[in-house]
Image 1 (spheres, rainbow, N blue to C red):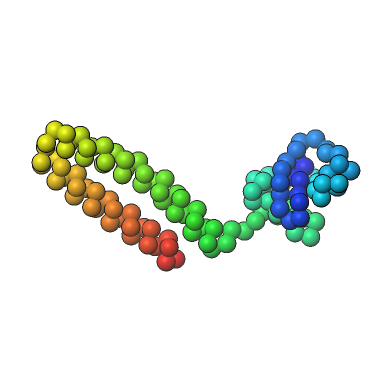
Image 2: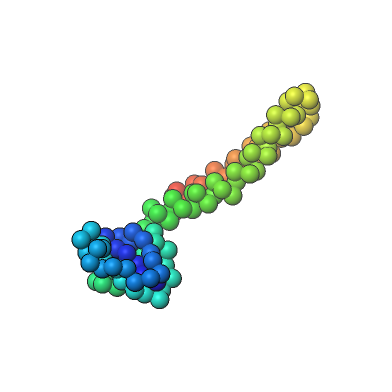
Length: 118
């Protein structure tokens, strides 16, 4: 696979050998590698393709995105259930769902705090 770089940043891939003269005129360098690295994670270090090591901030950001994705469906389901219980005027179910929400939010916030505070 040919990796295309502008500076140290990978801007694309191609399977066939690119026209290096055209690329050179655009400030792009093509380097062949058998490595399988995603474009957004490939960096050029001393003419060698390497996988970018994420910073602590990037790791935390990704962990927060993953946490939100993990809990989103739970919060959505609780919200819908609470809305239906309110339409039915079911006080017992409303109280039960509110307690479930408080517990879910407590666990979510604890996990989020662990990620943010390392």
